[in-house]
Image (tube, rainbow, N blue to C red):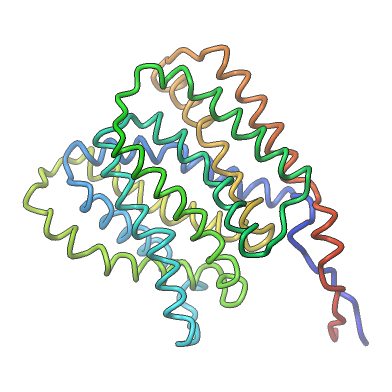
Length: 310
């Protein structure tokens, strides 16, 4: 007997499961800049990147679904996506954080949803819906308000800022490359192979920098967490989310990372929170809610449900 099965399309509103995936991603990535800074205390930037990718790929490999095969024809696109989304940006951020404060890096990183939307617009030749556009802009304004007090004393350099901006642009391109590959072959198999390709590409730089490393357990454990959580579990959550809601709307998880950083600072380091940061939190939540709402144009453009034989 034929039975119609509902089809999930990008324009649908976020489900509780989508919000859960977003929360996992944002919580882990909110601590990533701290992990990078701790890793840099003992390890050169290229070694931090290599270890991050190795531990990330090892974590992904634990999931049986990640070890499923993919067609050989997909390996080259996956390798390119891996370098753009993980390999090159993961090298750029530790290098940049030698010259700029983590707060500035976090603020610039919060532009990922905007670069993702810009790339998606160029590729699809279609702007996000008005509600999603407004949500993205409000969310970014909130991120600026949250991080602005910390930026007043930032030790920024033009080179460090430029490297982070380049990484953010590559993130936007990588997210758009990842979505069709993950939908065709599964998020976990694609992510595992992408990170393995990136690790192989980064290995010469990481091994070359090894003599400049000075081992310490604090830096090592920070890099383990950066890899296993930030490059493993968080990428699984984000990859699953973007395959369900699209690259642009999935990338709003980045807007929540400064909020997580503030909470961690208050709880574990008794840091003060500026009034503008509290206002920024409200803006971020409002922007994320708007961006997560149903995009009527995407829903109208989606294909009709197909019958499935039960």
